[in-house]
Length: 293
Picture 1 (cartoon, helix red, strand yellow):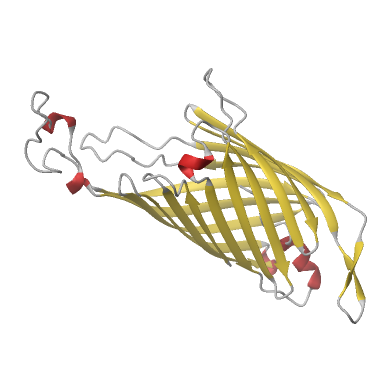
Picture 2 (cartoon, rainbow, N blue to C red):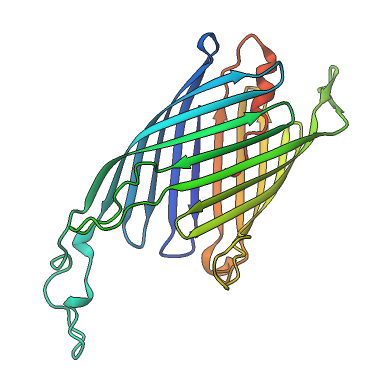
């Protein structure tokens, strides 16, 4: 189980705050995983918010002792809210005098709350070193418009992601009583997303120096337009604690004209607790817990 919290552009009035909490369990007797996810987001300038709760199911197919294919599905309920009692439309402004005609929210005709269902699917191959996956989100294309004509639906989002982990020479950890092997590895990863007219590519590398994870990611390569699409550099620090707790912090350094001084970048915190079974090897699969996907 775990939680994530992200504060984007805290120096702006239009800051964006998002959170996620989740719990999942794998039942080996039926090769299936079950999970619950709760997430929300708030945009402070427009006073809009999104809250979602979803149930997940996945099935793992064993190809051999080291390679697997896993398929997953998520069904969710989404609620979007907007405070339109504070909105002043352009039609309420007197161009000659600059005065506001009527009260805020008076000119709006629509529902300030939208509730809808949504669905996501994914397929993932993974082995000891490599993984590659594809996912499709917002299959039901839920309604986004608060206007009465219901004219704006959320486009389907497609994602390709993968990576490879390079094993490095092991080291030693001295705990004052004895020495234990220290795992060291370098992981390279990518995540490409496309939704409607927009696309984004994340490229990154993470160095695992037990118990620390150090990473850097670059976001923003592809673009449909002639404008530069250098969005940010993401720096990541994580630690795997002996009590089966994974902690992570990342900072987005803006490369766009938005700049660090005016936006404040973005800060993200993550924490995860892994319920260990009698098989200590299961802990190994939790160490790379901080990929920016």
